[in-house]
Amino acid sequence: MLSCRRLDALAVVGILLVGIACSSPESQRPEGTRQVVSVEGLDAFKDSKVGYLRHFANQHAPFWRPSRDESAACESLLSSGSSLAGLRAPLRSYHLQFAGVSLNNERPVLVHGFCPQGPKTASFTRLGGELVFLPLHWGTCYFEAYCALDKREVRSVTFSTEGR
Image 1: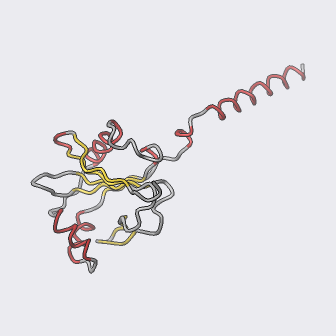
Image 2: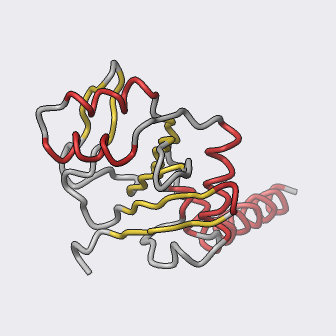
Image 3: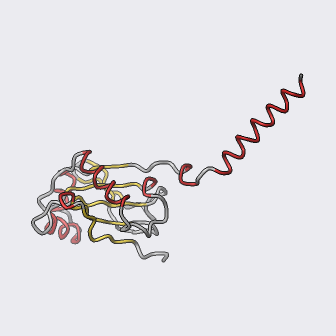
């Protein structure tokens, strides 16, 4: 009877090992964080001492805050199309930051995405009372895109060229 239990235990361990060895690497990656940037955080760019941040604010104001549904719709657009075919990891494992901007009389959602290990160097700053990711050092897996939700389009996808 004891040998039967050992056999059963060994079989269970074997099944577990096969299950672990055969599981997809995607399923082992933790899900990345999602952040919606506040209007106050973006408005702080207008008074920044850094020229390109002021330039960004001038090009993209007035700012607005995407709802959870809007940021989820943007992520769905990103994952359903071929515009992010160059990603180095599954989109769900990327950290995504969503911002409501204005551009050419439209209100797209701007999304910054970066690998789970984060940007190459610390590129976070406190603006308008919150921690905001800035693409100061792109790293090897950064991307930026605009989601035109009303037209269900992803536009102007830019990948970091470092390490390619």
